Length: 321
Ligand code: G3D
Ligand code: MG
Image (cartoon, rainbow, N blue to C red; front, top):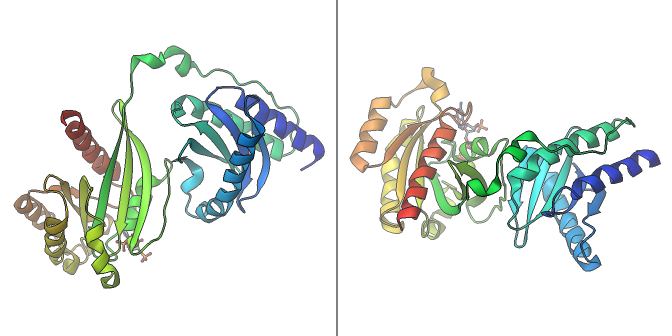
């Protein structure tokens, strides 16, 4: 980028961080995780800026890895004392916004979108860029105090045989939205997503359990604290359906008694290869007293509905508690 472009980028970001006191700083990061430009709020002390810059650098590698998964298209990541919000700029770049811990993310998102449009123009070499950020109408009209939002966290364990689509289901749910924080550990990947359920927000911590025998002995450590459990099977694979009983007995042994359990019949896009009928699935769910959903992690069919339904149940439970 030319010197003029770099200066312009600094100006665009400089105006963006002034929009809200919630914004501590921001940076444009490329797909290699390198910081192209960064700006911090005037109110910050030098040492805070130093710490935030270090944080961005440490995230570089992760950003680089996650570009392939598409997780960063629009995501937020809650870290100890800040929220990081990622917004995709065209051309394999990400605007990372650092927000204060309890910020109203929803009110910053429209401005982040305006910022990325401006950044994209700068990158394309355009010079006629307005530095103004107009207030989006919606925000002006909605008094923030009208709907006091609550945040709830819950843990969900996703189980079922290898290959039934557990990881695909979580990745499909994550698309376009969310937090992604996956650490491959011993046979479990942990994803964190947040999503709105009516007036509240749910922070979902999903444990994606490996079906591999190798990790079996660790699995009992996954269940404590889980408030919901999904058991997936693949409608084209009767063995994965038969094995549901194994997963059920594991859950009975290790999970809380009042956990919300869902039997998920996955890969319904492969209807012509179906070998487990809808009726068989429903019948088993009824016997187990589990909820029943048929999904396709490939097309996304019923996935949002599944998580919304579980979310509502969890929130109801938490409100009663
Ligand atoms: P797992 O995490 O339970 O082990 P994965 O399962 O999510 O890794 O999925 C295993 C394979 O099934 C993957 O195919 C994945 O693309 C496919 N798959 C998962 N869900 C669906 C679905 O709903 N429909 C279809 N058609 N395929 C699905 P590969 O070929 O990558 O192994
Ligand atoms: Mg998997």
